[in-house]
Amino acid sequence: MTEMRGTSILAIDGGGTRCRIALTTNGDPIVVQAGSVNVSTDFATATAELRRGLEEVARRAGKAFEDLTLVPAYVGLAGITGPDIADRLAADLPMRHAKIEDDRPAALRGALGDQDGIVAHCGTGSFIAARIGGRMRLAGGWGPVLGDEASAQWVGRRALSRTLDTVDGFLAENDLSRNLLDRFGGAPAIVAFAGKASPAELGALAVEVTQNAAQGDAIACCILQSAADYIATMSRNLGWTAGLSICLTGGIGPYYKNYLPEEMQAAVTPALGEPLIGAIALAEEFRKEITHERR
Image 1 (tube, rainbow, N blue to C red):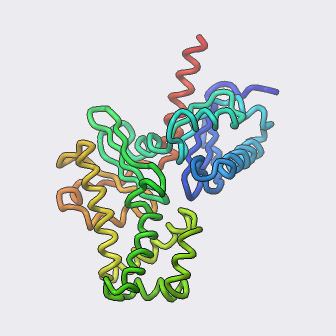
Image 2 (tube, one colour):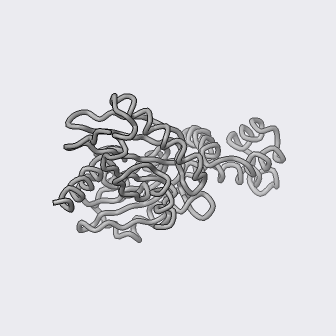
């Protein structure tokens, strides 16, 4: 077994829809994509996807898998809710040197670099992150049962709930509700689907909401407005003030811009990079830390 020395680093960014693994050695990274990785929702599937992705990285790099396990690794994953599950994952992963965190710091670093600002990341799950005065603050990301407001799965679930409100006669039927009732074959089928649907399956319904909102559908617009109101409130709670940049990231995040207060709309700026870029930067910092410790 030969150690991959020098500047080799592994960066892993995993969420409810996909996981990306990058190996960088003095050049462009080798990037492999795996499936859904949320260690709280499904630990066994998450670790199996990680292992599969790591094996593919080793194959593409022309290295033995055992060589890859010696590379300093930064692991940012959805579902890392505290030290217990991080330690459980560390025991399961074959990596010798791994720093394991949730997926929020990598997303913040990727979107803002070293600058101050707010990141509202809304993919399958969601969270709000801030760097103000160089200090990082995080909110949300507690999963589909207790949180993930404004996420794609939250939007999909809300769309089904509001459709059932039309069945009860509390809301007027419209295109969104009729489309969903037709798709599933009625209210009982909606209830059956929701009872077993994964976050990713619920999140897939968000496309229907954004498409209908673009046509002025009242229910769809109300759902997106509620999500934007949550983002605005949490951003202010984390210290946002006028002029501080806001990045709306994730698959559904950018759709909320026009529903934010005007002063926040004016502050919306493109992300500098994706979460994987942030994970690579954090992996490099981790490599330097452990290299310094060895001296």
